[in-house]
Length: 219
Figure (cartoon, helix red, strand yellow):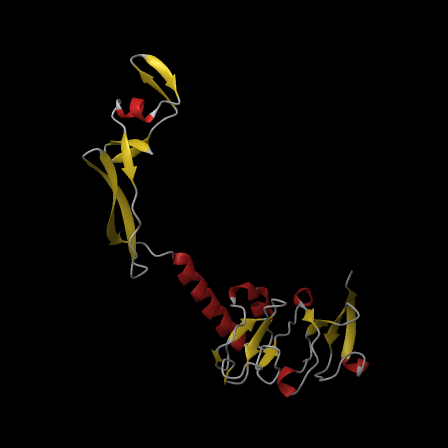
């Protein structure tokens, strides 16, 4: 590839050019070189060690070539990552302080999907299959114990919303920690949305007195 270096800026050879006052289409390399165009030697960018550095490219002429060079300069980190972290930490703190987990469900896209790892109480991950959020309730290591997945309700509890529009599919309660509480909504297996009207570990089928049908969900 041929180019010229003009005021430090590389200009690659055009597909048409005037040579001796004649317009030439698809000029050959020899014709371009006669007009001052040179071969370009591109080089691989060096790796940078931190997010506060960046590799900046420049070009210099060396004999019959234009050579790409690199300098390590101060970089501007992408603020989006920091903003997302602040948002997530703020949301987690607000969710922890409130029994209603609607805010966390609204922002569940901020949380990482579950993978095998070491988890502590309060960690939040989303189910890789459904995308729904779960909170760690028992510190554990799922690397050493591969059967300890996010499906384990002694390790992870689902969130429930007190806003109908953010109801999640029903999950059978396994104890006091994940029972449905008064005012919480869920989508039952019959595709209807139900509101819990008294704390319960039972489904609308097993204990209908604890539930009130709110809305029929379309297929």
